[in-house]
Length: 128
Image 1 (tube, helix red, strand yellow):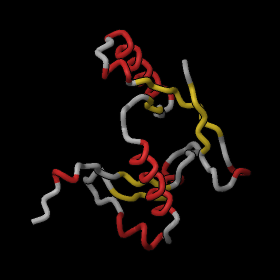
Image 2 (image 1 turned 120 degrees about the vertical axis):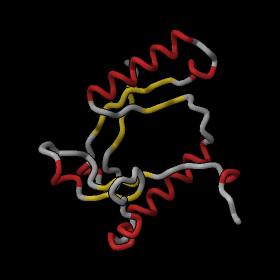
Image 3 (image 1 turned 30 degrees about the vertical axis):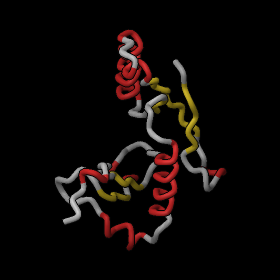
């Protein structure tokens, strides 16, 4: 199984942990390669059952969009807590900021904050 390493805390190398994540190649879905698509689906299932992480490659998402998303993500998480809380997830919603997960789990988790967003095309946004 192909894997990649993700550094959990790149700003503090002394606290960094390596997490091995399966690479899921989505090319088979785009080229109607049923065997490759079935293999990718199997790997996603295994990753979800084992630890919930996987990395999609050959997805066709523009590299500039990904780079900008990482830049804005870094900007958001570098903000003071009082600013991040302005985007706090509301009960029943699936998007927004949430923090302090460490106390909710019996094992150590590599994240303490999350930000879930909704991506939509600018063409779908009404400016009326």
